[in-house]
Length: 158
Image 1 (cartoon, rainbow, N blue to C red):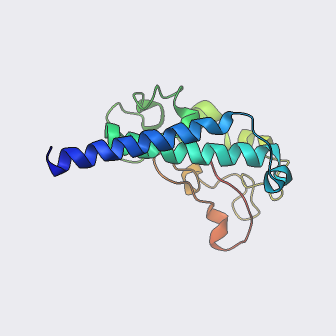
Image 2 (cartoon, rainbow, N blue to C red):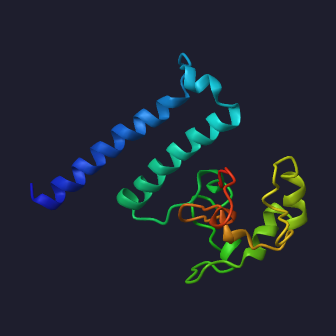
Image 3 (cartoon, rainbow, N blue to C red):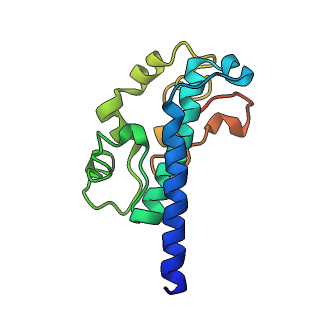
């Protein structure tokens, strides 16, 4: 077996083992002291982050495809409906943030759904509801909280 094939097989075996561990996270287990202090939302976000890292790694290394967020997989049919965001079937550029409104509603709708957050990341004192979605949200890479460039808010950006 040549070195390239051996490396690919070993990578697949390791990814399979890690994926198995991640999928077992859903099984009931006794909560540790740290876990019991987490809210349900924090626990779900942590599991989502772990799964997303594994899925992105497997998609990239094993299947050679562009990663897509797990919560968008059904809508985008596992990355085969690029036109939903990009406007074309074979995109060569980033999508226009206005396309997010096709599924998520207007910026005002999104701000209303996150009104309970303090501060509301979708209705800032600087931009109100006008900050483009992709200032924070990234579909094919890690999202970033834009406000963190100047502020120290603790938000997780999906």
